[in-house]
Length: 318
Length: 259
Image 1 (cartoon, each protein chain N blue to C red):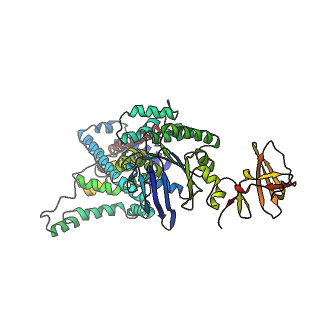
Image 2 (tube, rainbow over the protein chains, first blue to last red):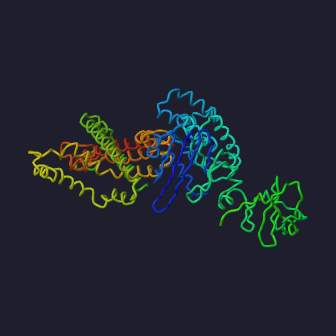
Image 3 (cartoon, each protein chain N blue to C red):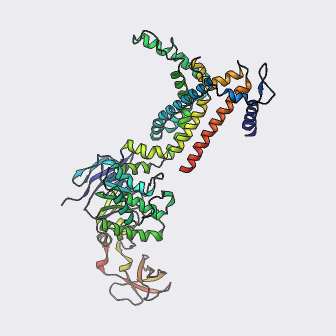
């Protein structure tokens, strides 16, 4: 079966700068797909190309078997949740949500609005104006306004970044729920790796305008293809050019005898559920080990032994 | 404020309640006679004509300014465009109106060219009518509509227009459903800034309208000069000021509701 949304060798140049270079992606129907990367990596530009706000310099966008890269935004069956929400300030919650339905002259407008309001828990707030809502409520109106049109793909441009951290975790869970229940394909742009790892069925990590790797979160985290990915996702120890995750690094006062290295504890940080122990090896490399909080406590200056399974080593060509 | 606005306005109000002097000026007794004269159908008609022409000029100014402002906001040379809008202010308004007379009169540039090209035999009646006055007003007050409109259009969040397109609104639909409603404060400011001076105009109507197009401004000017009836001129001014004030407050109250 062909993918629902396909980007074929998309490039976008702004003046002298290349924002997106030769990006190809395939997103299946019903997937929660994330584009993850540091700011300026081209993820938002990629999203805007799918939405129709930018025209790619070269390449093709296919949706549902139709090429759409030449169509204006209002002719594409995709909808966007903007980072700033972009709610119409002169319209009420209901009018904001109805906006798209009225443009499409859809039937059963009232019932669909009532239904989506219930889904995002905004029933009773339909006559408020956006400036009378909290940040979380505004975010849900933006979501409802796009969801009510039942797009082929819902595009989300860092929709959680404007929320405070406490709320962000809660909304993250709700978002995943909503996606499962509605069955709508989500293309989610974020710079927050925790968000991408926890929400996505599949994801692509971008850097400098190119896709470094696409796959399931587990694949990319455990088998990153590039050094950038290994460092960008989670923490990584670099020991003689070999990468080892802190959670795969073992530490003990006695050597297990099997290739363990000696070092001095330079720092021990208690994080609640775990402890991060930083050790300086004899060759000068600094290694971080994540140990259980209920295990041994290591003091700074203590001599310890550090080792890991060779199967946990990540090798990258220089 | 006191010296430039309150005191002159107070003097005008006082004069409107006095009797005319034999050689201009005012003398006692106090009277309301000047305001009764306003009920004369002749003056009422001039009032309505003035309102109508000012309203038409305002509508035209905003209708022309809005597309212009949208264009400027999207152009790469915003500052150059805005400078061009303000450029006419460097020349006296009187001289610019005279320039229009040279363009529009029977032996003016437009008629001469058209006749030279053999398109018309007799000169077109371009000058000394309502159309010429309207043209002069729109020309003169267009910048007053452009500047406040530009200020609101500039502040408009581009994401809102993207959202409109994203939700299926075609460009014209987005213009009427999003851009114009969100620019309402700027439109109101532009309307007041053009309507009020258009209502009180006398120079444009005098020079481009000739004797056929008399507006309230011309009547007032006339009372203070040729007719030497200062109290009646003052009474007309008071009514005009009240009208302008009422309009401004109406617009402001409405604005506070919206914002």
